[in-house]
Length: 371
Ligand code: V47
Image (cartoon, rainbow, N blue to C red):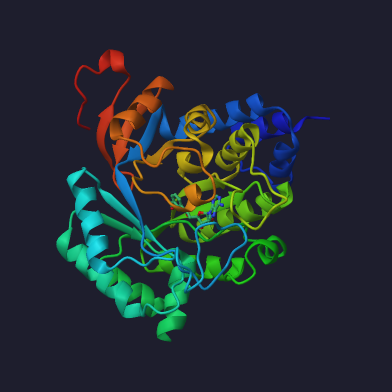
């Protein structure tokens, strides 16, 4: 009988996608290096030796949230003294800093604030775009978009249309957590269902916006839940082609309400990234979000099928409130150094993965080349 590694190798050689059963068998396999080698091969065919990064800035405009997800150490209930909501000028100030630091993208997400009206988000979008037309605005998860629609009593399609008209360029992949309902009920019972997350995401794609997809792993879910999550994403991507990157998010347990979970170890992180690369044959980009993985695991992941080391980030709260021990920010030089030290070619990208600048290995890199 063939092992799963042989079956997957044969499927990949024949240009076939792997089955859910084989994805599950990969998760259950201990052969991390063989899985990694297969993922690296798939990635090399798609992306060669290039690894993308971007110069971005995260802005978490509020931590006040009507949902109290058990995995989240960032959210605060209204009235909590440690709750905050940035004024528009604070957001503009951070955007100005980002632009001055050479950022090409703003990543804006926040809690579901009970009082801010939809007009606030429209004004935020319009003002950011008017003041910083060169910055690409990646903002609002499918969960927030659904919330805005309910707040304003508008169809989701109209919410998306208005945000896009005012400057929304793409959306991040948060809020997906684990899409299956059994786990979702345990870790985030008040959040929109996995079905709804997929439905809103499909509408974003239909409106011409690209988005990402995440998966929060290493808490109460099992391997079958991860495979089910990946299967739903692969099916949606078959229909829309609207996903740019898949980002597995390693659960950080501190200050959360999942006391039984400790977060994934390095082997689980690498295996999950590698299997995602192999299974999600219709995703071009697998991103190592170093904030949650830790920089060392994120760098090693570049040999396990990953082709995006995300960005400079600058101000991260969601992972650090939950105990992430990664730095708050990375400089562009440090990201390039990490990628080059992994034997790869660092490529600064824009939001849509257009190369902006290529940094080959140091020996050939007397001067960075422009693509
Ligand atoms: O949706 C919350 C996750 C997400 C914890 O699209 C946690 O490019 C780990 O989506 N441990 C927000 N994760 C972050 C996110 C993201 C990050 C980077 C890039 C992109 C992108 C998207 O963070 C939430 C949730 O799934 N999260 N709490 C925690 N304790």
